Amino acid sequence: MSSASSAGRARLRFGRYDYAAFITFAAYAASSLAIPVVLVDMAEDLRFPLQDGGMATGGSFQVVRSLAMCASMLFAGFAAARWGNRRPLGVAIGTMGLGLLLCSLAPSYMLVLPVLLVAGLGEGVVEGLGTPFVQDMHGNDPGRYVNFAHGFWSLGTFAFALLAGAALVWHVSWRAILAAVGILALVPMAMLFLPSRTPYPERGEPDPPSRTWLRLVELLRTRRFWIYFAAMFFAGGGEYCLTFWATSFVRLHFQASAFAGALGTAAFSAGMFIGRTGFGNYVAQRHLKQLIVSVGVFGAAISTLVIPFSLHCDALPHGIVRPLLFLLLFLCGIGSSPFWPSIQSLCVDRLPQLDSTLAFIVLSCAGVPGCGFFTWLMGFSGDRFGLAHSFALIPFSFLTMVALVLLAAPARGGDKG
Image (cartoon, rainbow, N blue to C red; front, side, top):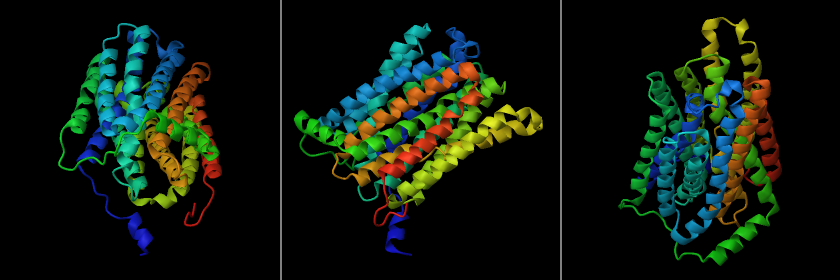
């Protein structure tokens, strides 16, 4: 075995702040999935039922959240330059939890929107600093650690989907579920602030805002960076269409229970978890482009199959419809898993002259609006054509992303992609 291959498969080593990052990603995932999983019950309670034209309204929740996230992500770069990654990340996850707690108390749809802004402000900083928080701890082979850590996003969605689905079946209020997610955020916040025997590698002297602005201008003037930026927009859109709408799709299109809807999201999340941790453990940094392209084509093919399956499932024996549906969603999870962290890490690797923390943040400022826009667009088209037909947005997003990555990352020496 070559030395390069051995390095690609070296054993991953974790410390205290790695585990804090894992729980942060899991709590962030539960926060992001909380509204989608309870959306059908929430819509009935707050009087915008999805089956009566309320899908675009439900999708607008993600738009509001995305706007708040983008605003706070821009602040995150300056906060990281002044205080490092760890402390702003701890404050942010507490803010995220506070927003979910307030959302659980909202008496109407109109009041959900402003409190989602609070949650989104915290989530934006978590999104912006979570990846560089891990990257800075593992400078030699960051792509593997970043992909592995992001796997806990998928584990969080899997566990939360099952627990929340079961809770809804047991007639637990959607408000109690949102409140529980808010309280969960206290755990990683405490881990990030409590003293540790192994200190986090904080940056040296704080950078003045003027230097941060100069680095940001340098980043924004780099033409290739904008291609990665566009790729992130479509990657976020394709992934989050599945994350946000899977539960409602299973419940409404297949007339399934709350738990069956949550199982659909859990199947998707299980595929995401296996894909991210598996790719993170076995795919070395130099193969990231090849990974994105090959999995992107696979994900586009699998998500396309959901459309004819959903429209013609009545022709199949009743007993195999749901197992096949969950299998398709599981494969969609694998086909969506590596894009967000891998595009970010590939960009930083191919453009090493850029400030890595700012690059991660600005790239997330593309992925998050992609999530919001495509989630709303899928709900809007679902109101008019049905959720099954609106699944066409997902392969479109993935194939566009693949084309942009090929354009942004041409082959180089040592890159077999």
